Length: 249
Image (tube, rainbow, N blue to C red; front, side, top):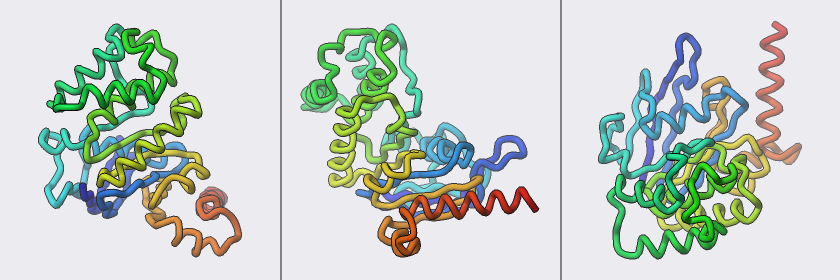
């Protein structure tokens, strides 16, 4: 899926969450969205998922305007928040089956795919357990398995590396996401962990107070940083210095 953001603006009251954000993201890319708390990261993903509408600007999916009522386009994506939603009394396997029915994704081989992912993420022995009885990391893995089983064209994940998953789960997620990108899926995830973004992203979006301050490949950012620090650390130091100077003025 090709995504285009054209001067997207979103405010909550008088506080701007996104301010004239523009970008083009092609299929097969893994994009990390970075920024401090309140920078607009989650709002960007929620706008792309259709959970909130934009105030101004335009979002295009494959050159088609995306609106919240475009269910045909929304079925081509799945948003996984940092605290996923699920019925606590539903079992892991029932939760997965419900999403497959909602997305009309009950194709041949999907059951085998689901079982394979449950096994890969060490959740197969817990498949009949209620979602509400799982630890936070297990709960997130169960929700992540649903996303990967559906395999939408656009993956939107809010803070997957701060989800409480164990190291094996994080490693398995990275492998599955990289394989999905090779199949042409577009993957956007938010994080505040600079090292993760530098090791697992084709491009990075840096948001600061709702504005996009960078949308580059890591190669370009390294050239801009000139080796003085990690490329993302260099950007965040500059943004922090700018904020301090503005507050002192």
